[in-house]
Every structure is written in structure tokens, then in C-alpha cells.
Length: 290
Ligand code: G1P
Image (cartoon, rainbow, N blue to C red; front, side, top):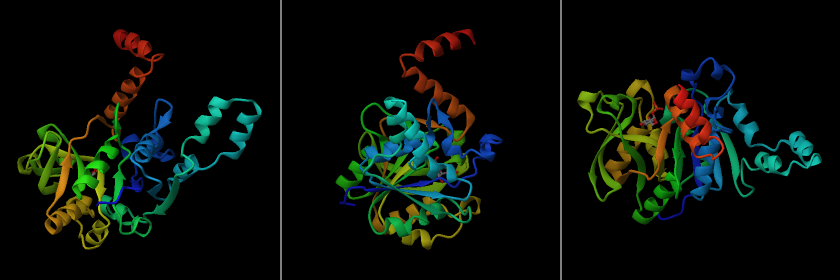
């Protein structure tokens, strides 16, 4: 893992059932927090971490994501004609010029591990990141993935983002058993996907950021269906741990919003509005009224 991270995988083939009926036609990754879709926050974080190749693992219902990162000729021409430079910059800025987006399909929904495996032909044998766009991580200094990529490179190890969650919610997450190294990082001893609270080794849950070696693909190929009958990334990381002995859990600096559910999306929206000098008074006033 001594190489810098250049590629980031975005598994975006999920159905988004928690946001039906909107997600009948709108990919959940396109749901906005204020004026930017969730996928834009995720892409910005990947680019900030040094990525120049973004791999979207998508399905037939997610064409909007490809469209969003594509050039919008007509719109751009109109904005240019009208001299709306600020808007033009926004439209053209969804993907920086030096970054390429590659789309691969996941033909069947066989689990997160399977989705990541679909990116193997593009990623090959080099360290890469995984971002689950549902988890929006707000930060003031370095983005979460960048923090993790730096640690992974320095320690020559895979790095998994973790956060403490309420003890009765372990069955929503991958959960780690880890020995602390310092304030933020710990060496993982064991990982388990969605354990019942009584069986969970801790309340330290995996959140949607990973830095992994290319070797994980071969381990994923050998992974059989686990929790929920799905091919789990957590199980392949557990295999990596057995093989390489060192995978780190990392408590990132930043605030995570689980935008895979309504409460999280509301929180993220209010939080982002509070960062905006024009919107903050609106939120304060309206929240007071409510
Ligand atoms: C996935 C992972 C799980 C992780 C979670 C974080 O689960 O399998 O280990 O804790 O993302 O959001 P999912 O939310 O796809 O069920």
C-alpha cells in the first residue's frame, strides 16, 4: 500500500427503497443536500484524496449519474450565450478536467462485496478507495478519505473508517473488534457484518469509507454469501486480515450523516444550511417557530 491512491470506487447500484416513491426515477445518490446531489459530495472527497479515476458501479436505472458527470452541451452553450459565468462554472465543475469517470455495471444485486468486485477490471492490482455516497462526511480540514489514504500509505495497510454507534444498532453495520494504536487508529482483530447487539464484539461500526489493496479482489472472488445472503465486503476484509495481519480501523475527523435514511438527510440538509451565511438565519428562525 505504499503507492498513492488514484482510484476510487462508488457502489451506486442500490435500490434506495427508503426514499420511494422518489427513487422510482431519481437515483438515491442524486438526492440533493441543498443544491448538490449526494454523489457530488462523495466525488469531491475522492478528488481531494488524490483520485484521478472514479469507478461507478451502477445499474440500468442509474443513467442519471453518468449524465450528471457528462458535458451538458446545450445548457453550457445557453449559459455562455447569456454570460452567466458563475452558473457555467457550477455546471462544468461537477468533475475536474484531470479526472475521468468510468462506469461499470453490476448486473445483479448480490451485495456490497460483489459490487466492489465489479470494479476489478478497472482498478487492477493497486490500492484504491471505496466511498458509499449515503454516508456524507462533512469536514473542515482534510476529507475523511484523504486522511485514510495518508494513513494507509504511511502504514502500508488497509484502512477502514469507523465510528461509535448506539449499542442497539450494531445489526445495521459491519462491526470491528480492534486494539487501539493511538487516539484515531486501531488494529483490527476481527470484523463481523451486521451482528445482533448481543453478539457484537463492540459498538465500533464501519462507515462508508475504505482504503484497500488490490488483493481484496481475489479474496472477494473467494467470498461466499454471508449476512443477508449477500457477498459482503466485510467478509473479504476479514480474510485480508487473516492473510496480511494488519488492517487499521480509523476514526476520521469530521461529521458523518447517514443520508441513506430520511432523518440523516434532514440532519445533513440542516447542517449544510447552517454553514451558509444566507441560510443559517433562515434555519434558526424557522426551527424556532417549529
Ligand atoms: C454497508 C456495509 C457495512 C457498513 C455500512 C456503512 O452496509 O456492508 O459493513 O457498516 O455499509 O454504511 P449497508 O448499509 O450497505 O447495508
